[in-house]
Length: 271
Image (cartoon, rainbow, N blue to C red; front, side, top):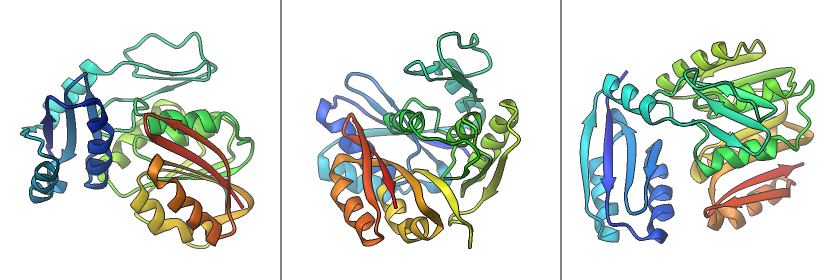
């Protein structure tokens, strides 16, 4: 397990937050904390490209500070600041040290460590909202870029018959495995990988990643989705929509639903 780098930008204007988060996500940053004028971004030390960050900061004339956060320090700080996430009356995402959910249909219990898909970000929230409208009963599901495993866990709670959850990051795999066990899931197969399993067919594919990874794997998504299946995508900015729609059209897929929040979008595609 490696340490993390914390990058802090201060005195930001409201319109700069989403722009920065989009660029930093593409650069491998995995977690963000925001307040009115400050943004903190986190990345595993082994993935930190200092030259790339300096280039970005120079381009937008944004000063920043950086510090190393050891694994143990990060765990303690993250747990202290972690608050439950409530998505409508549908799902509560909480840690086991929080009180059980009383106002939502489902709850997901996670260990809030260094895997950053805790449900706080708009992209995860929109994925969950879309999942509410999809029939998962008995379906074969792929969660591509599983992170903490929240979406795979929710898929099982919604009745999916078979779920494959994959991620390329060691810590995400470890944390997802812990969360899958904590939620007593029995239908999720967790794999470390950076590409889709070969010669598999899925009813539903979930991918909350970023535009570049989605575009790079779109042909595999199309090849592994059954006719009439659902491809649910997020980690995308509103400006990415036309490019994704063009990609979808090239594989005879259409946009059937969309959600937008804070300049982020979540697209439901079907074939």
